Length: 200
Image (cartoon, rainbow, N blue to C red; front, side, top):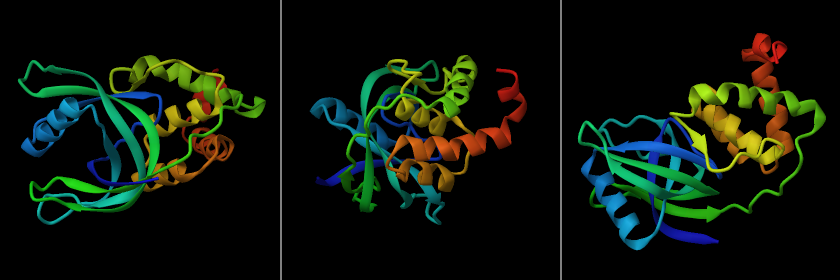
């Protein structure tokens, strides 16, 4: 299903379905975006930045992202607006451009929700690995409900939190099933965290 002119929030991080992500909002265009979302009970899309721009307004983003909704908001100690968003569904960005307020907007295509499958035996270490590192990352990115036995859920949580470049994260998001994603993640985690996996 194609939707027109959904606000885009370009970041170097991503949240995926089932994830919770705190954001600090300080630019006027994004404050207005948040106000509109709260007023109309709508969401926006978080996309990964592909490249910086000369004028400071990012327009070059990767073609996969996540439609999110605001589930909490408050004023932070530094006076900025703090919001927490929940990842609702993966999306494919068809095109995007800046509007008159220099807010990136675009057309998106919803991606079918991935089926739930049990984490295969050979990837159980990935589930255990995420469970082990979660206490150290939960202030930066967390989740709504734990589902450590669900292959899609585990693959989304690892894609969110691993220190990977945006291109790699986008490729992982683009995969349409959890087993392919877990296979790639297994290679990455074994390369980056071999010792930690051995200690599980």
